[in-house]
Image 1 (cartoon, rainbow, N blue to C red):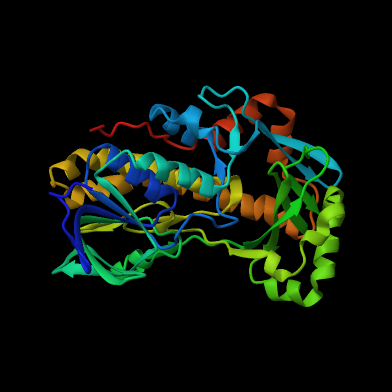
Image 2 (spheres, rainbow, N blue to C red; image 1 turned 120 degrees about the horizontal axis):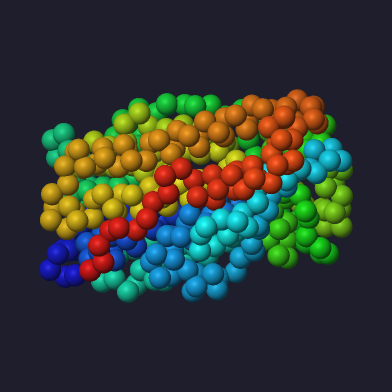
Length: 410
């Protein structure tokens, strides 16, 4: 970081923009602001990005952004698997719901890439920008205030606390955002009737034509990760204790009954510690900003894992934020109206996707968990009409109001 514009001591640091959270939104926004030559600090509370079962579906909308940044070819050298078509199995019947092969996009598929690979790639590319500093093992613990304005954050490091003064603080710290809590920003709970259990099982043999498997009162998603299956077992919200009470053997038997190809390695699930609970939340802030503070990504609108859209919506938020604010940040002229312009730009896509997720929760997942194996009429129609499969793919792959990189390059 430029020595003239950032002063540091063991207990203080000053910067133009402080981004809290080194997830997809935070790392992409940090990259874009660093690319624009804006003094920026990204705080990541962990020492690395190596955490399992985080959103790792990289959609064509994200790869379009990477292409516009000139990074796509190198990015795709990172380990990943591609999926061009999405199908679901209800009982013994197969239904195709999306075909991405006709997209007009640089990548006509969804790339399943571990999120740590995506974040590590951005971190590596960010080293080219002297105005950007990524501070790992640094956790924001409170907001700093100057009258009615947010003036930065108080953070905890392995060396003790540090005060980071910033002209603008951006919360990218996820669905359990400390910043939005400390700021007192109101949250509207949309509701989610499900939770998800994530686990992995070694893979041998061919792939699986089905992505979604529905059986009587049960639902499981299997993601082919090359040498293992990443599995999501969907349960009604609040039923984890009842599932534990039935015992691990019963859980493993239920998984194999639904997806027999997992039988050979089901013993990979040795205990409940191998099964990670994701408590699903669908919510959004009624207001995304206040003087000196903006929230984006899951901190502004927590998404369901349905469709794997959360990471991509967060990245779209980051691109829009840089488009709207970068030049004004360079001149230190960001107004409250500019911050609210980000919400105005990104609220509609978030509301549309959340509304679709709620319908999937209620009509598809709720029906399957309730014992109905007959898929909804809409899925049966989509499976019968290839044009509709391409339209679903367009919505899934590109989202609503896809963003293009327009922020400056220093």
